[in-house]
Length: 277
Image: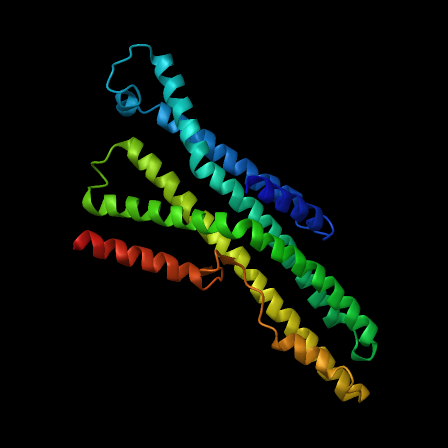
């Protein structure tokens, strides 16, 4: 299974290189830097809070302050690396690939819009559709590779958020340990941003796909009005009748932007109901 996934990822990365992408490399590097700084900040904040020292040393009072800082900082660093750092890296890769495909679909839509109806002949239409087919092949690869992991990332984020919200519905925030506040804050922010990124970026693909089909159909309609040609109407009709492509999590959860409020609203509602029952 691992070998198969590795092969799928290799093929996906090979195909994604064929799609030109002008998204700012500085922006991508900045996001990676912010994530790394958050990782370091989490470890430092845990290290300087003496109240959690005994928890990390299993109740043993260690006198050496530097030893405390090193052990607590290292444990905090490794803890953050396991979760949410690894899941955030997967989310970042998934979002980057989706953004690349979304940009290419948007580029094709603008290309159609800029083309006069008289010039949008059959050869031009087929050229656009060939480019769109290449993008669709990449999207199917993304679905195969990331459908399972992104679904369980969302599930893990939802369970973590529910447990943290439930904890602070039962406990007083002001009286809680600073270490618990640090962990909860970092984990909640990470879970929210990770889940939102998956739904928002993947949901943008469906929007761009719908815009592409509408523009293609509109251009063919204008060509029929101005040029009087009816031979190409079936091509536009067949394209517009196809359902818009939408990524899903394990074919269970559709990745659409409207799902962001639905997921977090349902999560909060059921957490409150369970805590009150």
